[in-house]
Length: 213
Image (cartoon, rainbow, N blue to C red; front, side):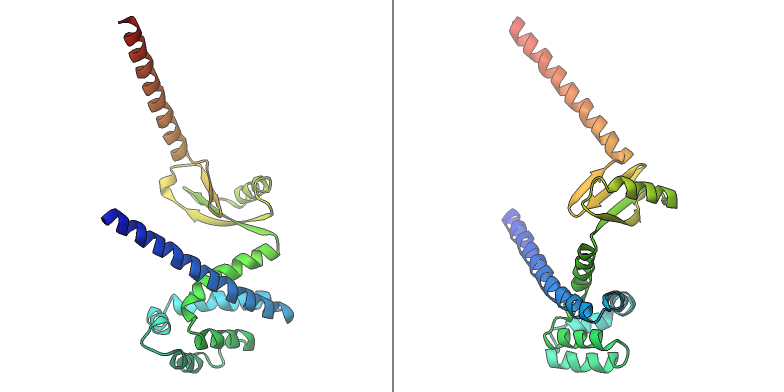
């Protein structure tokens, strides 16, 4: 029963994530479309990123209020307008009001992710997550970007992360695809090869023994 419940919970979470992504894409396209018409895409994206980073990240209670079911959409819109009045551009301010009126402020993080992704696609940029055990120098970053151009369909933009568990080497991730070139992965490969070889030898000896008998 517990396994079935776990599968159900996983399916529910996956469906919820997909629904949230869909909402994020719809609103991100709307925001980018409006910004493109007046030539302020970069400015609006910077505002969106700043709002999530400087407001939501620093004031979790405020974000919890915006996503709470205790307030109606109209109450959230009124509160939001009082707090943010005069602190945003007209376009971004109107966008936030629309989100508040439709009770979609809880999707701001997803909207930021999708807006960034869509903007990257417009410019032919492919985000590549790069994990290394130690920080990369500028020449190393340039070398990696040059190598990635033959792998990804676009201009690679590196998102750098330090991960001491890698031991050495480097791990790339493009979307859901992982390219693991770390020492840790190489060690696991060697270990798996040794195990496979041992199993093969045991089976060969067993078969030889059975045949002799």
